[in-house]
Length: 320
Image (cartoon, rainbow, N blue to C red; front, side, top):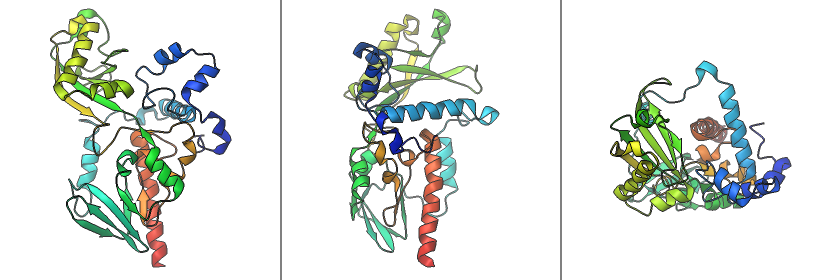
């Protein structure tokens, strides 16, 4: 049940993934290799992510794989970034960029948003999609209720640093292996991006460095970090020597507007899933971290639908 995974009836599973796996007979060494190497959920180890969230995510992904059929969209034409760009073009009114928010002040009939450049923006309602690792540095007056404030201050986000590499030649044809691979070294997980449908030509490789590996690479500058990653790929795949060129690099945890990627519920935090998204006066919350029955981009869409109805209801109720 995707909408009730956080129910108190399942609280016995709101424990560290590590503890759950140990209870099933796994050794620390097996957990380190099988879960903590390029782990999809967690900030540093199997100790800091709830087994209940992981079970929910696995179930959600299984349903996605089985359900959509030909309607499933894996990637938008030209890249997923084209979706928010297209959506932004359809917005009415001004889209104000490069205005870092420092404070949100709430009153009975609206809210005022303060930006670092000194500007103020008054509205009858404010919708906030700011990830909690960033929002915890924004002053909200008055403070949200205790449970919601605790979520803002403590909810984790997955550290990921990505390297987008352009192959100057198809080195995988030389060694006879897949262009994509998984390792326990600095190169982490390497995925192949293809032109068009499955089976199309490989255009780029995306290196996903997660958790402590991401934080290790974040200690270096762009060029040195890329050198470490490419050297590791060349060590593992000698056919790749001289074949890879860095096109782009991004640390999501060091991004001041992100603070990480998707939300991570630590052990004992699943009870915050509902209160963290509740309206706080004229301040409303959305974003992947506030969704209940989905994750990723689908979660962002889910939360957008919910928050739009919340705002409409609040404003129409005030007018009646």
